[in-house]
Length: 449
Image (cartoon, rainbow, N blue to C red; front, side, top):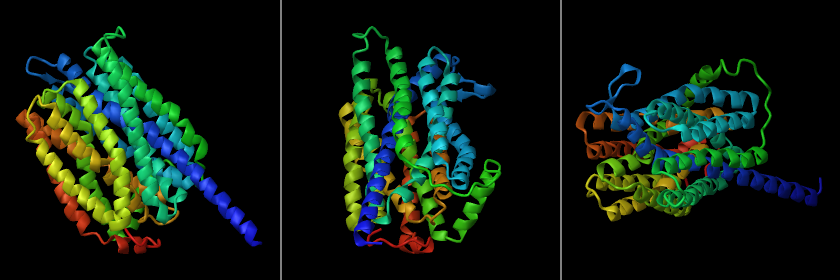
């Protein structure tokens, strides 16, 4: 084979890889609007208000006959959605690796989630149970889709590109979230001019996130390609057995397992802050919905810069050290949040800025760092376990938040309780030798990691 032919094939491979990478970024662009507009901004305060309208004289609702303080219902629903994810994600990861057909599974998860989100338009009056159900379905669907989405990363980016590719994906997601939040802010603040009630404006914002999710998912479904494997029987039945086999395989790679444990802990804190910050702002700090939208918009804009900036820091100091630095910043920021005065938007914006600068980078670098710890050919099943740590096990934080509020009636006590996740996560991650973990997985060790 001639040199020119080899160069042509290499160029074609690089072009194909870039095409897939660009398509891969767009799924972050598609689904992150749900995380931002629905989970972070609108649904928490709105579902809490719907639950409060259905509450008894003592402020409790009674789903399945269980007394629940209305202010805790949203946090408990988030926990329930994550617990459901635990049962579904291993099946998706095993099916993807056994058949090599990730795209149909990604499409199913994405469109179930998008449909549930669009259905939130019908959440009004005292239909808090409908809101809880749709939240559970949408959150679980997002978690399953992210198992499949993340598992593409080792296949579409060589080791030296993964930090940058992962960070760009997060940046695309946060850019989309910011763009849609601007539209949400216009609609919500000017709802009277559009002839809409405040509740109707919120419901439109919720449903539009589902439409956005479904529409832009078409791009990655067109550009990403399946890597065919030999079909095996019993895919769905074998899902849990496959997860058990993955965990046994990880036990022979204890450093990979140790990283997952550290990630499980500190990411639980991150996910809880994302989902509960708007409730804290509206219920404890007496901030209006417009203030919350602007604050989250600030988070989105700074998270783009933060994800790209921390990606550059990782090239100099390594991903592990950069993540450890972000955990220190998380601890300081959340600790400061406990002391924020009520009715003071400026200080809430300062807190939002601190969160934005570390949010995207800590998540993006964790994903890319883990991709180095995955043995070749086991991407989906290992990322299924990763997603269990990312979303599937992130029920302890919302549960602790909800229980703390249930017992104390104070959202300040609830928010400060989350600091423990960042402190413990820092200690656990600091103890992991990531270079040896990469070698244990049979992968080349980057110069900086």
